[in-house]
Amino acid sequence: MTPDQPEQVFTYAAPALKFGRGASREIGYDVRGWGARRALLVTDPGVAAAGHAAGVAESLATYGIEVVTYDAAHVEPTDASLIEAVDFARGAGTFDAVVAVGGGSSIDTAKAVALLTTNPGELMDYVNAPVGKARAPERPVLPLAAVPTTTGTGSESTTICVMDVLALKVKTGISHPALRPRLAVVDPALSATQPAGVLAASGMDILCHALESYTARWFGSYDAKAPEQRVPYCGANPISDLWSERALGLLATAFRPAVRAARGEDPGDGAQAAADDMALAATFAGLGFGNAGVHIPHACAYPVAGRVRDFRPADYPDAEPMVPHGMAVSLTAPAAFRFTFPAAPDRHLRAARLLDPAAAGDGADVLPAAIAALMRDIGSPNGLAAVGYDGRDVDDLVAGALQQQRLLATAPRDVTADDLAAVVGDSMELW
Image 1 (cartoon, rainbow, N blue to C red):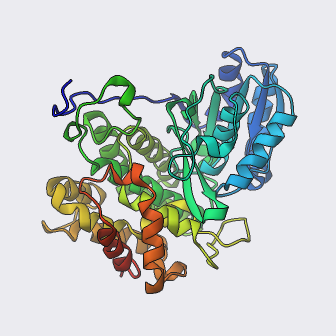
Image 2 (cartoon, helix red, strand yellow):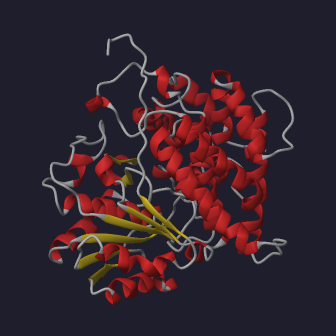
């Protein structure tokens, strides 16, 4: 390796995967195979009420594993909610494994528990710089099995734990390979019960995962790195491309019918197939972006979610104001991909036609138009103004996005504050 040599190595990692209807009922067999005798099950009140967590707990108990349940995971975790979960786990004795049942919020909460019940220090020691100290784990974290009940976050595949830091009104996270779950158990029978609003928001997270990783900076465009310098997000590469392309193809045929079915409308033939394909698309996109990375829409989404004032989305159980993560990511996506188009026109056009085979044209607006059409059809808010922002918020949202340098570094073009201001300003209304 020489200082001016381009990178020639990319990395790929993924959890063990079990996929299919009924897979969650087998998890006791899998966790017992790790030698676990006592497990902490992490879930949220809504998932617990739906009975999904109880089914997983029953499977664990069937294989002789003592289960302690924490059912207070916060939807869209905060630093305070993660600390509460860690304190509960620390006070509940010693565990051999953690099992998360729920959306990305429950899985990310479980990651924090797995880390901080085995390693010294406090939460902010491990949070990404510059918000936290970016401390690396010194000891092995508890093995984690993740059972997603929503289709979208990809947390069951990734090395990231995301949270809102309340005092700073910023969304950030912890990023380290040790946080990747050991096992992802994807059971479409669980995610098929999502309300329409949750499905629409989490499905847009799938879409943005696939699009951002597919259009991310190519791994070979970075300077060469020593092994210890490589990070989980290595840029677009031949393997992540396969996952992203397949996810986009599934979304093209499954997303609209799945949302119609969740609304109680006639989705046409194949409602169950659409639900299964959404779960598969989420899995594929997670396996792609968990290695390639994401960029501008996710960087912008953190302050959009973290600075929310009064918006309350449909079909989410918490009464407090929130912009769900997948919704927050999607709101700046059309403008973001219009900005990144010059860096890789062919990739943007191919992505547009995977998402909408009828997409015509060869300019920067083709992919944004395909995204906006999908958002309109599934009932997404029409831009940032629809969730409570206006032109007076642009500078504040840009400042929050600029704190996400780990993500912005993955963008295929260099991104300045003025560029982000243009993206945010153009995202106030999408159609």
